[in-house]
Length: 366
Image 1 (cartoon, rainbow, N blue to C red):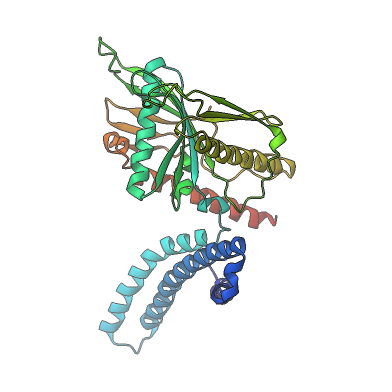
Image 2 (spheres, one colour; image 1 turned 180 degrees about the vertical axis):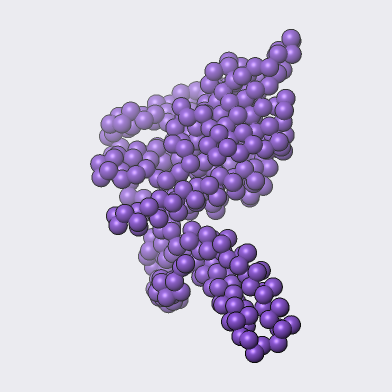
């Protein structure tokens, strides 16, 4: 059972944060101000969950006291019994929600996302599937009011992509899409299949939290090799007429990013630098966690491209997420971007993982 005093001590910080935010001078340090806003949001969520949980606990205690009072009216005690049953049924879910709210906030939840989708085994059909995944994520983002910005793309002749890199900007975009990293397998009859046989193809997805202005990333211009070249593929009259496409190689790490989506060389260079900062942020954090022996961000699956996470079976209209043993018979709707049920199930399972890890850490005294 969660102690009210324990939560109350944590929520004392809420009043302090509100006082700091009300100070007109707080906005002078934008980095600190943004950190305070995020902390305030997290504490307000904790306050709400705590209020719901302790209201149920108090109501259950009051009902129990009435039931144990032999001098109370029988009808009144019967009503108390009903109240106790109702509260008891709701307390476990409220306690779980409060326990999750008490977990240390994930610093990446506030970030925007950057995704890379690559066609895997399956030739043209794999590229078509990669395009289908991009459209699925784009429609899901649109339903949430997020902005999708292509960074680089290698289209094939059938409307798919050999590879596509894009940013998804909007509140909670990385928090929702971070579970998409890994191998995606599709089973269906390709449009190019004349015999009606089901083929199996694959695409891989990588998801990165985007770097932002608060990250202390210093990139030495001398560490960069910048190449300019002409765009290729479909894209309008400007394609192949100017050297507007940009490729940047970070020499110390070997990371290569490129963009040819914009007409302007300057805009493509900006997109490349944003992508490079995101990749360097992820690389630096991975190295630091390995150095100190820290556990990689607790998440369902590894997020590695080689891990098969999901199967899309079109003949049976079935999607199976292998990490959480979830099967949904609404693949047609999911491919149209209606991913909310899937995302919610993954988020719930991930919260359970984090909660179990935290309880294990407390139990071991580490």
